[in-house]
Amino acid sequence: MDQLSAIYLWLKAGHVIFVIFWMAGLFMLPRFFVYHQESEPGSAEEARWLDREAKLRKIILTPALVLVWVLGIAVASAGQWWVAGWLHAKLLLVLALSGYHGWMVGYAKKLAKGERRLSGKALRLLNEIPGVTVALIVILVVVKPF
Picture (spheres, one colour):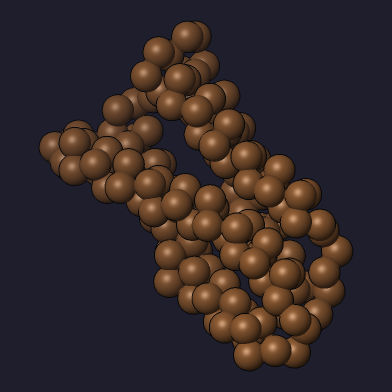
């Protein structure tokens, strides 16, 4: 525990950096889906969107998600935050956001198979989930209301 405390600020900085990467990816992916669905099935444009979506997931989203969790657990351990009520609420929201991430990855795989189940409007509305969730998380972390 003493070693974690010594590098607490570095862990916290890394956690924030990868949260930013993760959020950027979660904001981009539904937008990519909108453009993907507007492309002609089987076209070169659709192939480009499939490639972009896969790269976003594999290069940014999934690694950032893993590092957010690893670094977040390290920060909570180093700061001895496990008994804090605000942290429990934050973890619940981060779990929900992780579930959203998983759902988006699943939807990307359906799009790759040619299944276009959601409208552009629905995808645009889904794009609001990360923003609202991260705003609540920031309030919990900064204000620590309980």
